[in-house]
Image 1: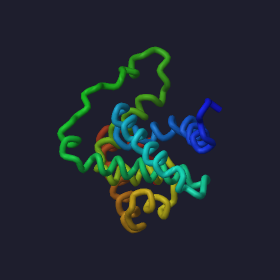
Image 2: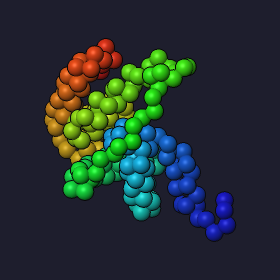
Image 3: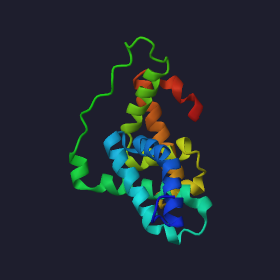
Length: 177
């Protein structure tokens, strides 16, 4: 333990080190931009750090961070400046790259279609299918009712199917039915 570090600080550091990459990946699925994902993950961990002493159930830390992350994302998309800001970075060209995995183009098409969904639908799909949360846990993370989660998920899947069908990538959606 570094000198001057308390037991609580050590516990937070260990949790942060263990979970930062997973939280960052989830943030990227929500927003589609690595820089914004870094900001969202930082916001989620800062909220956890501020509340660290209040968290009684250490088993619930992942849920708490996930809720902070999703709510930070939804708050960000409501901001006027965020709606005007557009990321222009293009993903690397993996289609023609020798040795590129066969699934990379499909994953990129899926990620592009996911980014075209409205924020709440995207958040519902990420929570339900990427985080593998049930309807109740997704509702808690999004701060809405279970009925809203069900309708946002259904609408999001329908729109995702529509987008992927238009791009000829519908076969990848068969696992989400």
